[in-house]
Amino acid sequence: MKNIYLLLTVILFLLVCSSCCKKNQVEGTWELVSAQWIFADTDTAEFPNSDHDREVKMIGKTHVLFIRQDTTNNDLFFSGGGTYTFEGNKYIETLEFADWITDIGTTLTYECQFEDDMWIMTGPVLEEGEEDPGWQLHEEWRKIE
Image (cartoon, rainbow, N blue to C red; front, side, top):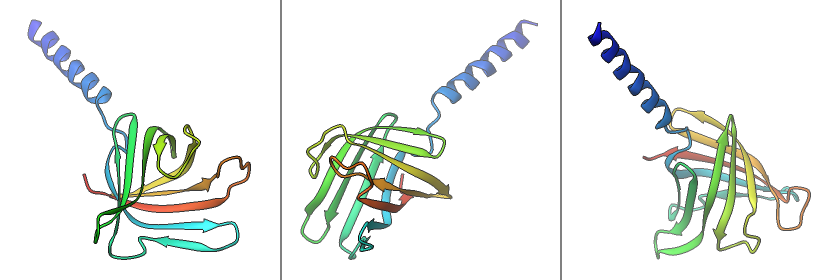
């Protein structure tokens, strides 16, 4: 009887540990495969726009860091990071630093879907002081770790 209780205790312990330590879908390292930035004037920019652009996003339990670089000369296009939350299909970044914004604390909200090792994010991007979206973002990321 003691062995059954011991076995049940070990199984319960393992179940609790595996559920509390489980990663969410966005945790990991992602590489940008394609992106469209769709502006209000119907102009669209597509990235990567050459074989020399690379963007990587690293996501831990509570923080995110991203960087885009020109790999031919190692020039940085931009970088940023901060905290994030992920619930259901909503991914919300709160920027704590970025080289292109002055409004630290900017929050960006995206709708997400996952297909195999791909993460697709879409949503409006608000510029400082705007109430209406300045442009829409559609990015596709591949999990690399």
